[in-house]
Length: 372
Ligand code: ADP
Ligand code: MG
Image 1 (tube, rainbow, N blue to C red):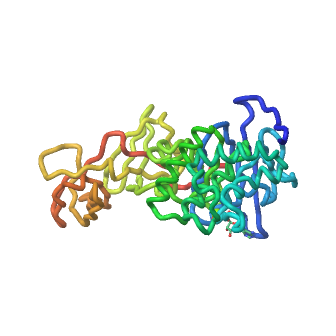
Image 2: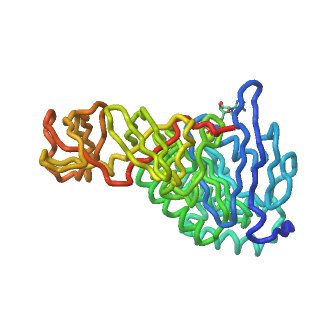
Image 3: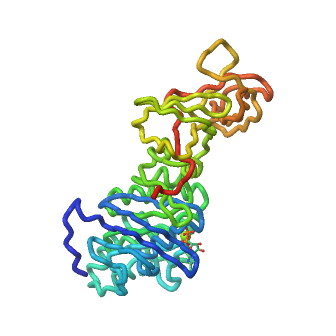
């Protein structure tokens, strides 16, 4: 087996990108990427198609050469390393198995390439197949197993040589929902069991939210957010992330007034919000918007409740466990509120009171570009 670099625990990140850029002629696929992945971490790179996810992973695998910057793997500069990166386990986008080899032979392939001994190879293959519940399929050929079993075998193949890092590029994108959900849980279970640091690329926000320790949101080749799933969903740093990570009510800000430790924000229609100035608000010279998630908005029949605005029901979408109701605020603008699915559907055109949890509104930067 290849000797591993000795790295100081907790100090050297498993992978680090420093000012990394990738251009294809005039197309800048990645711009000024600075990123670190720590030991044991499950990091998801989330972004729409064409945002640069595969390019980023490809630079660690060695299939894409960076234009600028430095990439380190366990402390070692691999930016222009052209030898095979044995300590990287990867599932590439639309990866496949070798058709003329059985499941066990496919999984053994990375070990074989390194000239592992037969006994040791067999032990490692059986052990990873057992972890993925694949022992029963080990003598089958790829044409004899299902699509989701194939993805399982790809995971086994990527992990069999005990890599320093696991990279997965949209591995479940082509599976139907039930299989996708089952495999999401399974990949997470295995990653936790092995504690292998993982970078997972997806365009699916639900997948990113449920699987990751940390999410890096990438848009147009740039990192526009970096945080835990909960943080990014509830406290997105900018409007683009707020909308990419879930449905967001956006209120246009008309005026911001800093008053000591508070910031008073006045929106279109005269709605007012008070924010804690120390709560990571955008700089006062930056354009900002108020964001509220639909599940934190509430609708009630017209009564004398205070702290709520009058609104008219415009549209109701039944979604099973909840109903998504769009209301037109009397003060102008519309708000989406999620109410329980078993409620009698609010009547279109009826008047209701719309309110939101205190603390549910976030002031977010309108622009997703990092400030120079
Ligand atoms: P994602 O994986 O997020 O869908 P990619 O990393 O594949 O995005 O692509 C990022 C950008 O780089 C896209 O604009 C894509 O068209 C471009 N790109 C990727 N690979 C190449 C290539 N080999 N030649 C030219 N442009 C490329
Ligand atoms: Mg891709």
